[in-house]
Length: 324
Image: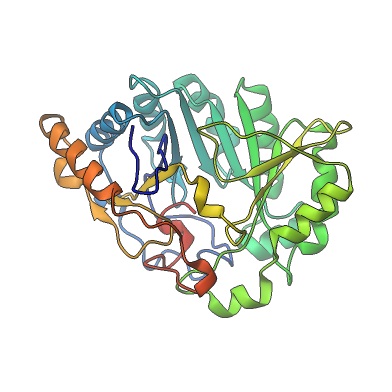
């Protein structure tokens, strides 16, 4: 089992397969893909297979495929299949902006996808377009309905609330899950290397939302060992759940159970770490013992905090670099 010097165990790998995204969300890539890498430079299927197999031998049980937008890769279905067929991997998840859901969700499930996260920051078409730069809300909502019918183990919706944009929709979004069996997670806006002014104007503390939920009889749900960073809540009158991801909350990093690998094959010990450690040279079948050794060595360097409270964003220029 991979373990750092603080005793945290890492059973969960977030694997970015591209840093390119076709959306231009104002909190992530407002200027588009100008700093992103070409598709040709991303990890190959063989490299991904070696990487996932090595992490599985080190105790990884859950793989989340992220981007950028992972569905930009034409071989995404093959990536899902490789992850699912790797011995030791119990769950394969995908985070997407949802624009290809109607066309591909069933093929992803057939390839072995277990869980799906879809970004929906507004249920108002005009606000959705204002945030993402695209008028695709209707087809994404259709895709969510198809996902719920596809046999997936779990479907989650991610929303970033911002004071100058969609904060006024909080109650509407909560009510949306009353008859829909999804988990809607509100994610605190995080400061990155390129958004300091935007962050200061728009950050909404998850603690505000937590107090509202508790006052409205929402009940915290116990977390599993491979769960992500969200604290989930259930309500006896709602089919769906609400989740809060609060990176600025006290002791947020204490329960960290995940590592990240970029589309260029760099191991990132934290979303807001100072650097990534290249693993790509050893991502081949004949070098897996060396790859395992390098991962062990690098994980011992993981720090006890992300230091976001101090305004330090590390090497993270934008969230598409590592899939947030």
